[in-house]
Image (cartoon, rainbow, N blue to C red):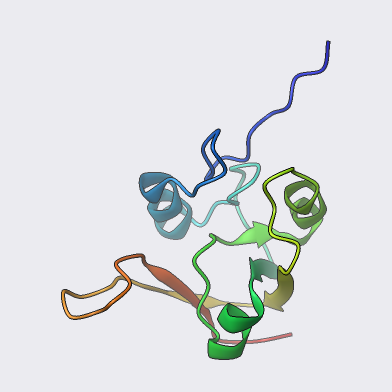
Length: 108
């Protein structure tokens, strides 16, 4: 019997878990394996997220991206951006989207 291990920041339904996303940001851990991040850091996102340089999914190891993209609920449009650093931006009350974002600041 095969057991699939869920990525750290995602729930069984494929949705991001807000508390875990925040933990990834504040502790600088990978959203898939939950181990400490090094450099480069990878982000996966839709073409719209790539275009505005603001991602909802937490930072990942480059080596963990393939594992995430292989899951059944992975978005087939996800693109990968690598960076040496990022900012974690919490939404304010006036923002239409209440989810925090990650903004890479040193694209590689």
